Length: 183
Image (tube, rainbow, N blue to C red; front, side):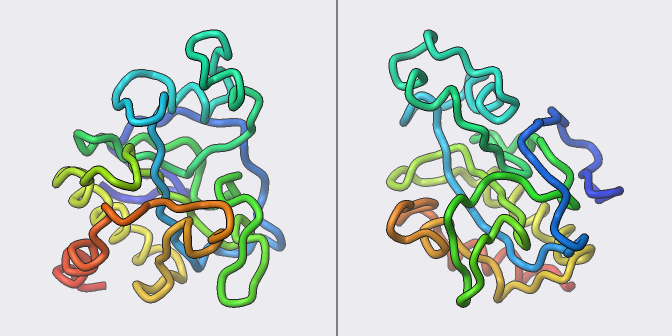
């Protein structure tokens, strides 16, 4: 896997309309890890893709009626089996963080990359997800002004609203995988 013009090679690409240009062409300096499952606590299926590209049918599940109108995405999603789907170039601002603050800097979308893990706060993530997340992170660390110390959870930048990636995310394991690579 490599990064070319903001896009990962050898991953499924499904372009989303939920992005803007970054302000002043700012390069991303923060990585935010999220989780998502649609419907909640159900894995697989097309629903996360459909939400992120703006085609989620509100009638397909009662939960979807409340979220189908949202214009949100992540730069990429890592499914339970380790498949990586990219929706927006890392060079663009994607609408993933909402009202947020990192180290007293507001509007984290402006300067961050959002990666979603298919999962929930309380269920363990898969080995394949940790491996894929480490591989993507390695590419991001090589190509953007990111450092391992500027990787955080959605819950850390929006603590009053968000809890993901949750207590099930093993930060130590993830950091160990990153430490195995030289940047």
